[in-house]
Image 1: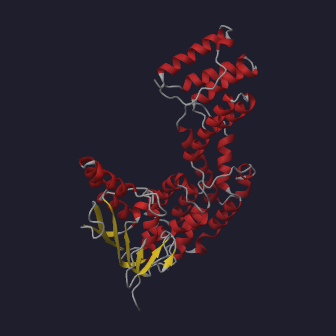
Image 2: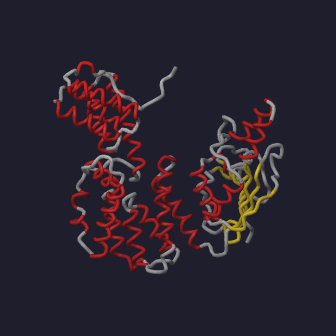
Image 3: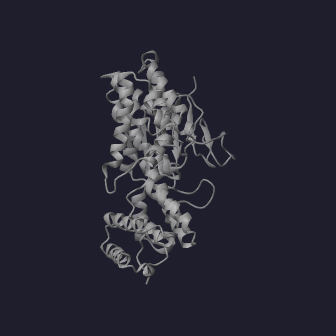
Length: 432
């Protein structure tokens, strides 16, 4: 059988005895496709060469790209990479004259042409650590063979003989990326933290399969039920678990997936009554839901009844549940509230600030704006003072705290007309 060698991101460089693949340039490519979504079967490729390619993806996407290449390589299959040496390139930039600086900038950042922009950069150690995390071994550095006029890194590594566990994760990442149709790094970055949970628990798989499955489900189903569903399915496909042993667990996951459980977890957080300045609120929320799911699994409870309240909530649209995304949405709402306040749509601004506070209850500026709006909308002294006091309890900046106290003092003295009828935006240093 002939060897399968891939030249990924070939551009205008044709390599005989390789399958030349590019996403943008079809002049010499044998195939036009995304190098992060290869059509080759697992463990079918002998050699992958990717010259000046990985820098065209941001760091989090590089993890998924390299994971895909690991998936298709055979055991002992080799991966050869070349990429700019970020550290040496910056050193050259700093020490060079202006003419050389311009070309070195293009080497570091790429150019504005389809497929030619650079989104990240590597040193050898940074790339080595990422390759080790994916599962590659025998990682070595060599002198660059292309673009020798600029500082570059050439790295050679291989897929190990004992690759099974890392193969599970490479297949898992591919299916999650495809199944959830995620390309946004704002989602991939927090998603990777959830995948780390699988990595941590995976080491204990052979100790107690039942405990492993229960922990996997309870700790990750909140993010999106597809995560444990796909992961368990990959474990079954790779002979690490038996489907017949986990029928009830799979029924629960199927139910939670159909009910879009992660979207209702988001809604539950919105509805939940929260105390201010309680950093443990997030971890307690997660822990309570983990215990609820574990209780259902351990005691074989009727999950439809046990989860009835959550399941009946109206879903909030989101691909995954993660607090970083919740707080990002809160920030967007806060700034939309500032905009509506500035446009003097006071009622709408109040509604938006209220929504923001339900997502992130610890933003003092939300309550400061709501206090000012309460004065404008004549919501009553109780509402005004409550929001001022909530803002005071959360605000850290001394100068802003002093201004906040002055406003509250004016309110207590009945001088509400002295309070500005304008929003308090995110704090910025005054421009002189």
